Image 1 (tube, helix red, strand yellow):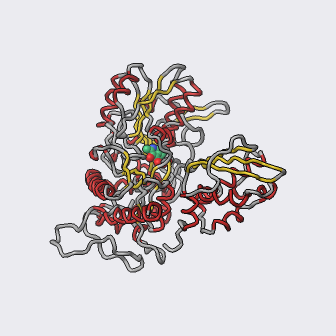
Image 2 (cartoon, protein in one colour; image 1 turned 30 degrees about the vertical axis):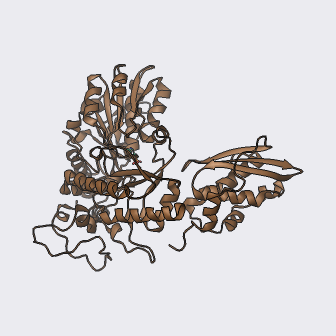
Image 3 (cartoon, chains in turn yellow, cyan; image 1 turned 90 degrees about the vertical axis):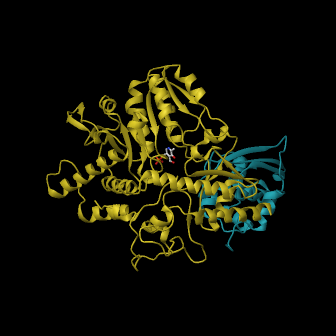
Length: 447
Length: 130
Ligand SMILES: Cc1ncc(COP(=O)(O)O)c(C=O)c1O
């Protein structure tokens, strides 16, 4: 696997001439050799080829503010995929030839990298999935359908992404289990009083997102988990929006399951992770049936492989798993504390600048310390789709819509918002471009 | 940024929509939503001798969906029902006169879809058959 630790924090060599790069975001200045230039975003931006493309004629440089939907990929990840396909690809496990052994070793090394990234004590606890959605569906099916009885309570929150809501609706319908919802306070934080009321009803499972993708709220995951465990529930944390942006350690959280997506954490699409506590995974039956997940197959019945193979039926996304390993190595090389700090500075800058734009209302926590690098807002008199379309005319990429959180938006009496979200490679000038674009929105609609 | 779709025609119709409101009673009332963005349009029609004698629309959504519904009402009012049903997506886009990207096509044609489903009583029409 390509190591990418050298990509940070050592200053980057000049870009190779065959990779056209704009220098807009790269601060070049006289400085002592030991002081790295600019912000984290300025420094690592050269690592992300897509962000250094020349814009098409007539368009300004891309301001990519949609990292919450999917992150961009550093060269280390792209190289890991290419190198794997050029040198190592073969189907994994059971191959007795060298290529297959190498591919297997890299796939399993990626699993160990994931375990290390989230502080999991045992790599066997790491199940590769396609994405967060599949991880949650895995638990809902392999654990929920077999363990839930009529009347059993599953606690969710009104702020969940559809992927942590609909699978539980399906399971509840099938098993007769009931869904209970932790409420939201007007500032976009969870109403923990309503959590306690629900916990008094002896729930079987509490499932919630660590960071809200719609509002950016960072929920007190360790505290929620502590209370839920005290009430005897299993705890599933949807880490789709936390793992890329803040340090996440499953032991410190104390949860039983953590699901996240590779594509949001600088890795490839098509790969995700479900981490589960070993003794719970061991006690669960399979999710999908097929190759790799069996121990012994008869014509009419089978027995199951040990975890995590039991949950990885069929040929997995081998290259993508290896690419995810490269992504996590890259992120760890930066350090998640520094990523969080950088994104927090961007958040404060954005909140400050947006406060100056007439008609813009920022939603979510009034206390920015409880908010990740996600800013959801509305513009008076302008539909979010129109906002996003006008921003796109200035090559500012944001998301507009319900962000797969229709119940949450209904709670706020909205159908859609415009959302800007940041990553480690985001720079201030992108937020400046957003503000310029919003002034243009006002000029067009409210001028 | 010269190819902005936010030209005067869109903004005028968005800010001052034609035939806006409700008809009660109406001969035909139909409501559709765009599941992608939650835009909603409701169209009420009164029919006399096979002609659309009165029409009104109501809804909430982006400027493109609301303006194109407003423009659509201008196109069909006083015209035969059969003509409105035969109206194509291209006819409407021509009247709109703006470049509509694939991402905004559902917004631009939501009114047309609502009207056609209402007039024909069909339960669905594929977007490429509009
Ligand atoms: C909080 C949260 N949960 C779950 C998901 C689903 O992720 P995926 O679509 O990769 O399965 C997302 C992605 O938008 C998310 O933001």
